[in-house]
Structures are given as structure tokens and as C-alpha cells.
Amino acid sequence: MYFFLLNLALLDLGCISTTLPKAMANALWDTRAISYSGCAAQVFFFIFFLSAEYSLLTIMSYDRYVAICKPLHYGTLMDSRACATMAAAAWGAGFLSSLMQTASTFSLPLCHGNVVNQFFCEIPQILKLSCSESYLREVVFIAFTISLAFGCFLFIFVSYLQIFITVLRMPSEQSRHKAFSTCLPHLSVVSLFLSTAFFAYLKPLSISSPLLDLTVALLYSVVPPTLNPIIYSMRNREIKHALRKLLQ
Image (tube, rainbow, N blue to C red; front, side, top):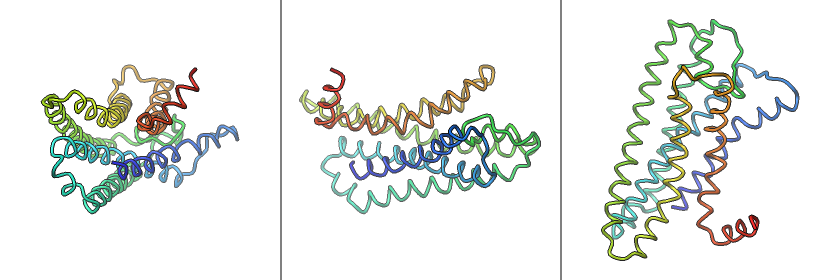
């Protein structure tokens, strides 16, 4: 679990470092300019870290499933080699997804100017600048990506369904509490990640506005990477004690 948390922390750090430093620099210098290559790099790394994180969260749900539903086989199924292979697969899936998505997006001709109404280069905002004939090809690719994301969501859902069935069958209340407390941080992180991403990309066009788009983008690009370390740190007694002391 801690090996996967290390990877999750690196992905969160990379995700938030892709957008915020440039946005803060633009705010300090009172400018909104970004080069074409810089915009492409920002899109690539942002999608890379997001896709890899989603893949890693899917793998972590399997890790929790094996730990709770098949504890006697945990050492065999989740040895160091298996964990390293799964983590490498998550990073690799993020890289391939980002490479294809970025190449597809920036191969489109921009017919409606070069002004992105966002504090970072975001694919939906770039697509608004493209020609309508070429836009349809990108929509098909996005639909394919969404179907893969739904497959990961289904895998997480089934894993936790099996976990809850197993936990409810445990005779000891202490064992049930321990199992739930182990799964709660991961479940919270997954819920936060999916809820913000789904609202950002699946919200109705009728309620779309520049201010709402900016708020939603800030929500899904900054809030989850910031809160993830805090959510997992709540299991640490020293941090809980320090937080309680701070609040008092």
C-alpha cells in the first residue's frame, strides 16, 4: 500500500506542478501568454498525470480487494515484483493515453483564433478553437477514452462491492472497523477524483459559462492533488494530534 501511495504522491505532485506554476507566473507578470509548444507540453503532462493516477487508483482498489478478501494469498499475489509491474503499467497507460490525446488534439487546425479561456491549456477549450469538420474526429477519440475510464470505474465498483460483502460477513466488530478504516482513505480519494472530473467534463452545455468553467477546472486540477496527501495522512496519529491541536 505504501509503495502505491508513493507513486500516487509523485503523480499528484506532477499534476499540480503542470498548471499552477505557469498560472502563478502569468498572474505575477500580468500576462496570459503561453507558446504553442508550451501549451502542447502542458496538455501532454496534465493528461499523463491524470490518466496515470486514475489507473493507479484502479490498481489500488485491487490491492485492497486482495488484502481483505484474500488475505492468505496477499503475499503471493501482491509481491514486490507484481506491485512494480502494476505501477509501471499505470505510468505506461498514462503515457500512451496522453500521447495519443495530445497528438490528436494538436493535429486539428485552429480556425477560431488562439485565445484559450482558461488559466491553463485544457482540451475542451482548445477544441472550441478548432474547425467543426475536424472536431468530430476528436469527439470519437474522447468517447473511446471515456469508455475506458468507465471500465476502470466498473472495476473499482465491483472490487468494493466484494470488499463490503466480505467485511459484513466478519464476525468481529474490531475486524470490520479495521477493514473499513483501511479502505476509507482510498474510497475518499477515488470519490473526490471522479466527482470533480465527471462534473468538469460531463456538465450540461446549457449551464456552461467562463466563470463556471474556470471554477470547475480549478476544482478538478488543484483540489484532488492537494487533498489526497491530507486524506491519507489522517491515519497517522501524530498528524491527527497536530491537526487537533491546531484547530483548538
